[in-house]
Amino acid sequence: MKRLLSIHAWLVFAFLYLPIAVIVALSFNQSRFGVRFTGFTFDWYVRLFSNERILEYLTNTLIVAVVSTVVSTVLGTLLAVGLVRHRFRWQNALRYLLYVPVVVPDVVMGISLLLLFDVVRDAIGWPRLSLFTIILAHISFQIAYVTLVVRARLMLLDPSLEEAAKDLGATPWLTFREVTLPLIMPGVVSGALLAFSLSLDDFVVTFFTAGPGSTTLPLYIYSSVKLGVSPEIHALSTLMVGITILVLLLGTLFWRKRA
Amino acid sequence: MREAATPWERLRQMLITVGPGALWLGLFVLIPTLIMLVASLMSRGSLGQLVPPFGLHNYLRFFSDPLFLEIIGRSLWIGLWSTVFIMLLGYPLAFYIAQSRHKEVLLLLVVIPFFTNFLIRVYAWIVIFQKEGLLNGLITAFGLPPAELLPSTLAVYVATVYTYLPFFVLPLYAAVERIDWSQLEAAYDLGARPIRAFWEAIFPQTVPGLFEGFLLVFIPAVGTFVIADLLGGGKVTLIGNLIQLQFGSAQNWAFGSAASMVLMAMVLLGLWLYARTQGEKGLDKLV
Image (cartoon, rainbow over all chains, first blue to last red; front, side, top):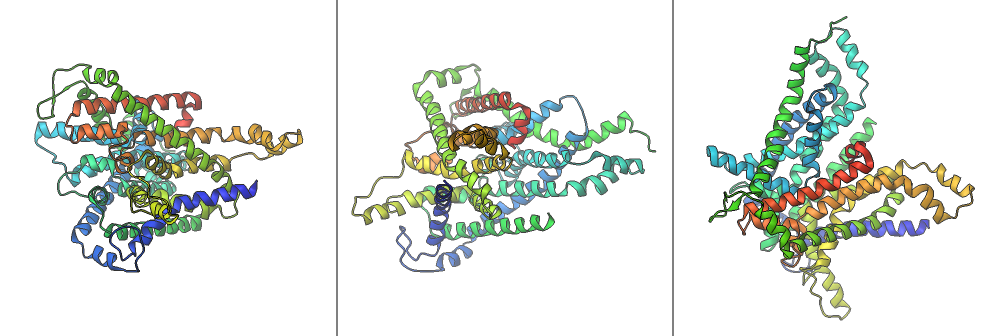
């Protein structure tokens, strides 16, 4: 029984890594077409880094990810604190609204934001679809994830610590800055990392809210898959997989050290 | 001791914390949904724009045309079977990981594909399935004629299972970790045979995790349009593709909004059923 379980597990792992291995192998393949391996080369990497368009798309992707992560982390953290510490009317409605970006398929999210931007533009002539609209759209789903992650951390917190600070005469802002925030920091960092990777990875919502001149890497990969791939994409993908593995490894080591 | 905060002070604090986020969700989640609802009741203008008259005609068209019902059916069908395959692959895997001495490493191995760019993962399957691809290379090496594997429903299934498998393994693993194994011993002591002991003592403990994993996989699998678009070609049209088409080349935003509302209603119905069986805590656990 145990043998069977482990054979099954390794087959599933093989399934999970086969496609990644194929892409990595192709990125070093001399042949431009097909999957026959004709020889080892770094050519595609060299070409990738001299391709200015791809570097521009990379910059766009990073601008969107950084700006949207900063805004959504601040708003999401505040919202989580407010939801846990205060009781108010419409609180349940707000909590359900928070689940919407998480559970609704991203194509629905994408077109509803496209409709919003279109209606507003018709009325006041602004905003054009651009990096700005992509950022607004990303914040709108990131904020939900950040809030839920931070809220989970807040609910584990011992409220007596904050009460002690208040009893000692700390103002609400001082209490938040010196007591609450340091204690929920791991949650804030996890939420921000999640928001960042969601933004980097997002294709669907970006697809509907991007305009001319605001191509991101996922949009570029999509269009080149549709129009015929140049092997530079393999090199780019391999680098992205490499960075993913690196970040995850560092993250794991970091958390382990803290724990 | 410091005085308790005045009601005004509490209101001010609440507005500072909840205010910006709530405003954002209202502007960019609630209002767009309402606009989509209104748009779904409008008509297509000569340039594809939204114009009056208002009415239920888009919904009537959607539910009276067998073509669209077939698309809904196909989306649910492919989503359901993909989820079943994912469960068959993921359920034993979660147990294997939980019992391994190298849990952390194995979990990382599940998470890495999950964090690898979604489009790259889908594209990799094109490389494998295409005419000159890896699979056909293998087939022709055995002296068989190459197969037309792309576009195909098979490719859509494989890529869907591949894409969402980690979504299932992670919550299920969390459930397996919480299992109280002493119940298994109790079942053995009472004379149960291994299969019965597993079924009666262990399986029920994993049911909440199973539900959770099911929803996390099923909802995106039903709603996706990228996988069917890239691997199904024109052959496999799901509701996501229909929506994309209406907002793209078909230029019928009103009808596309109606199709979106239908998809959203299906998801919310599923969640409502889930919340009824699992309670509200279940919803929190989901995210």
